[in-house]
Image (cartoon, rainbow over all chains, first blue to last red; front, side, top):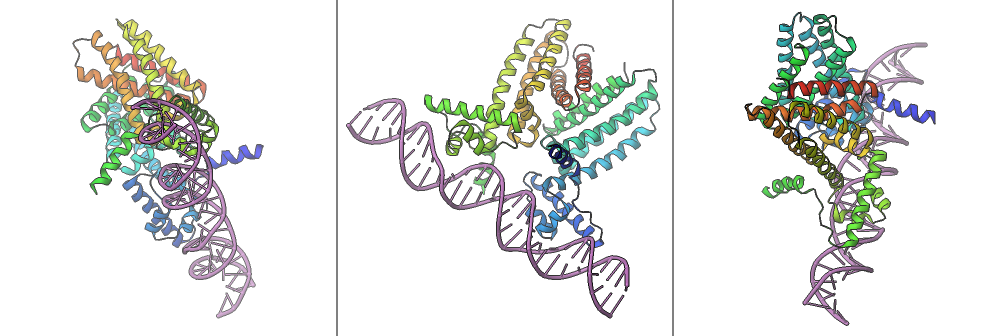
Length: 213
Length: 213
DNA sequence: ATTAAAATGTGATAAATCCTCACATTTGCA
DNA sequence: TGCAAATGTGAGGATTTATCACATTTTAAT
């Protein structure tokens, strides 16, 4: 019985490549697979993406695909991981040098804009982070990513308000960050004009919470 | 070619029962189908729910199931519609008699608590509104529901601040409402203690936006 | 260079699932 | 009563994921 539980826990944790490509040849092929998947997701969404089509477009057999990805979700996960790594670097850089409230306003506003534009321009990212809730592993990746990003925010807040309750700051930052992701997802699912208004409203709300107390 | 496009557009719009049950017999059977689906979703989630299992548990043939529901999503949609209808009535009642800022605080805080507890207690609702993003039709149902609920809030705000920009009020209410749904979904996906803190933080943030200006 | 082992590649096919359809039965009603 | 509409059935078509036994290529040790 314990085995079953352990196995289930692993299932979510593994997800990544079933077998790491060590040779040059296979590394290139895996790249082609990811590129093919990315293109198909952009065209039809990850749900409509077919493994056979991914293999065909990557110029490999379906067997090869499953050699490196244990299942369909693993491909999406792999793409999602790249996005989170990239965006974390970007966010960390943007918040690293913030020293006062005015700087936070600037940096935060800019980050929201970047995120908004990214979602508008990147169908793959949009698809992955919109369908997130359906996939347990992806959901957890997103939560972990969000927590990591919120930490950057917490670091800034601790500098600006050293006497505030740390737990309170953590909660606020995490909430504000998640609200931001939700706001952007919402904004891209309505028409452009309303989306812009919603993002602007979110910015005001978030900044009021972050700097004005 | 145009036919294909038209058909695809309809596909999302129809969703509801393929054929309305007019006789008593079939109405009862449809209820059994929905009850079976509800139970299975509570046990395993809507994704793992199998049409064959729904039919079996409802004591009907798979053919009967498809007589009244065009596809799997339609069953989930039907359940979702009931929840939205119920909750809209509840929300409308709670906000109808609000006359001043203090009343709004009370009513809003109570609504958030109810919503939070509902998500904790209702696995079906949790499942449906968490996997929302994957299904275009469901996503639109949720958006429409959210807009309708935001309207109740707008009505209150217009009473409290008759000189404010109506468009601005709409935007704020819609955003606040969506953030609330996101906050509750977030809260139930972390441990209880953190979830409580997040909901409390959301309440403060939202109320500050709604009444304090 | 030889060769064994490891890594990689292939595609027919097993398995799971959704949904349809031709036909049977029951109900409402003229 | 009898007929048309509504309802009920479940085997089977169609699609798609994922596996597996076997073939080929690469690595590295002798």
